[in-house]
Image (cartoon, rainbow, N blue to C red; front, top):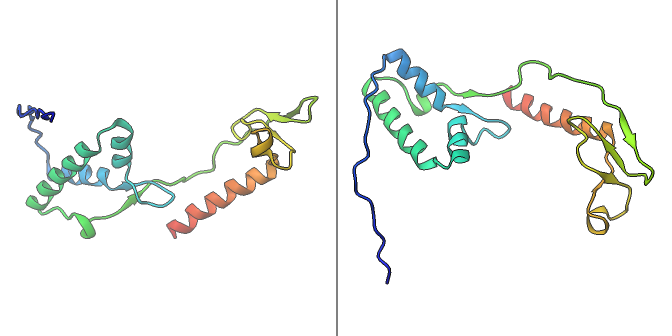
Length: 152
């Protein structure tokens, strides 16, 4: 049986002195939630991407403990924050291009995949089914409406 060796060397820690307002700001940074379902915070998402979810969780516990010690509300008593779009996105016009095989390819942020008119595209040729510009606009509009409904 292989023995697992656990490193018990204490990690170096550092002192950070915060005013109460700075502590409130740090608490609030941990509370910014991401759309569309508000199930994950910006901090949690960053930690997940960087492979540090345990560090983020431990750090939040430390921040919450200091908040309680300083009589700074946490949990249900603290305000909630979320990211959301607050202005119209930049919009550009892109020319849709057609090649000789009747396969549509276009440039721009909404047109990055090849699509075709096969009846069973996914199984026959592996390309996505043809989707018009207005189908894509409708999808984007429905996503925006979902976000707007969540904020009301």
